[in-house]
Length: 370
Image (cartoon, rainbow, N blue to C red):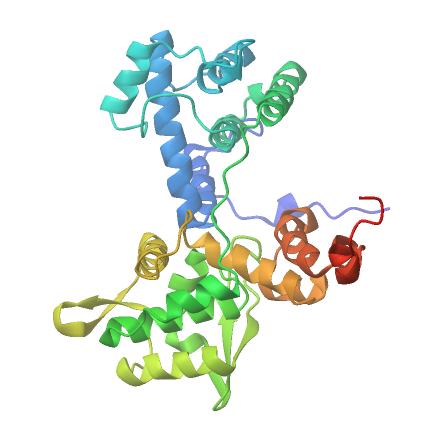
């Protein structure tokens, strides 16, 4: 087979050839820029927070700076036993982080309070450490089998001793309706009502998705139906736009908000200023969480409320009302069935015939052997 020698046809260029085994510095920066641009803002923030904590802990615990060399697995194991509480025979819980270092981390404002960290927090920070190693081309210390076994057994030990994973309260239909009854405070109430209903009824939208919506993403079909388009999200990064429906009460609430805050472009949900003046700047993700918390407080609701309450509440309520799981996931865009099933089953079990096999007549029938 004849192979064309293309080198004879190429012009000469005044550039030094690259080393096949070394990535050029500008290419490293370009690759890092692609990774940063392709990562969600909230994810970048959580990574930055986790690496800041690692830096502070390493400096105080080892006198070592998180920098140009990989960390051994022993450091990751120490991180686990320093931060995860383990049960003792007398029923008390301990962790190995020295009190002086614990206090110093709190003083430096890289740790919220004294004491052990939640399992999910430790797991997330280990995950971030692993990603940091992979991006630097190093072996991931968190992939060591012994470390994985320790983390798995630590979670089981905490669960057996009654330390449950904390989840935000799910805003099912009843608490959502109570939140909506508080939305009577002028323009702010109109905006918050539209935001709550779109985030909940529109498929349990993440707060990043809510604040990312633009006026241009909306399309009205009729008085009771809108479509809104999602672009890149946490789980869908292809850039293909997907339209989701907003119907009935939620569609009417959206129309009411657009009537008091008309715009032809820009962010859908915007900040408000003194006197109910609508600004041009989009709400932040944190402000969405605060809106949910404020409305829950005004409604007198007990629980741990956050923006995620709307997403988990939508899935739970769909389970309660017998909506097929596939239809729910088409709206929420969950990729993992395992992730969504916990919320969905909690709602579905409430109407399951398996929970009332005795029947009402059995529950009220007098005991013949009494």
